[in-house]
Image (cartoon, rainbow, N blue to C red; front, side, top):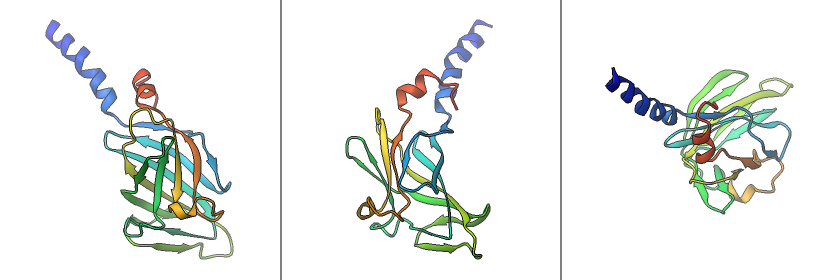
Length: 166
């Protein structure tokens, strides 16, 4: 009995820390009100940004287009290169499970459509407090680029202090 209790007291906290943590309401400054970060998932190996936009069209750049693809830039100036763009949807329907080359989508009507995707990056360094999501480093000030700035990041310490936060 004591050995089982000891096992669970040691094992259970490790299980909680190994699970992905999800920030359901990230705080950030978009370059356009139609660009939305719905949530951010932190895993042991990746940072995944769930992104959406309501627009007439959208262009998704895969990892092969290093000029225009998304990057993360942390508060210390470090650049995190895109790992993948996945689960691209148009009005809730899956269009592309993964993007490697440029993908251009249009709303198919005269009305705006909702485009969404998951943007995968490497795990952030410890103690990163803010990041910028930039669609190509040359497009930092471009109004039509899907950028978001000053994204508050849950640090490793914040996650460890409250493992129940999801």
